[in-house]
Image (cartoon, rainbow, N blue to C red; front, side, top):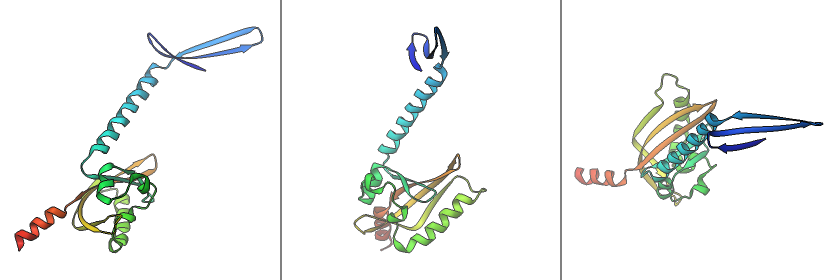
Amino acid sequence: DLEVNGNHGWFEARIVRTGDNILSMVRDVSARKLSEIALTQNEAQLARIIGSAMDAIITVDKNHKVVVFNAAAERLFLCSAADALGQPLERFLPERFRNEHDMNARLFGQNEANPDTMGLRGDLYGLRASGEEFPIEASISYIDLNGQQFFTVIIRDITERKHSVDELRY
């Protein structure tokens, strides 16, 4: 098999030799190739957007193992993406929130009436690699891609906001 980029598109050629006979087949694969290029460009653009986001973006699979950990998450949790990938999400949650988080995540993914996103406010905390807890707000989305479940959480550190509110109350 040979794939050729010609002046009029992409073509796939196959040459078969049987004895003294040579059979050649040429097929136009331009539409497929253009779709592949568009998909690659879209994936690259999405990766740049996620990488440049100011909020932490973490995606986990159905087992709550980290599959995406952007640069803002690295800064927020003081943990490199290389160390976070494949790790359980609960590594970034204080112990006292882990059971509740696991239960809520299961319900969120199973609730068909649920919109595919949910915002979380209130007393939520993250856990840095240093062991320091910090207040957060989070937005979670869920998607099922061909039977594979993924949860993406966008996390914002609200430490400064909480300090400002506490000062105003004081």
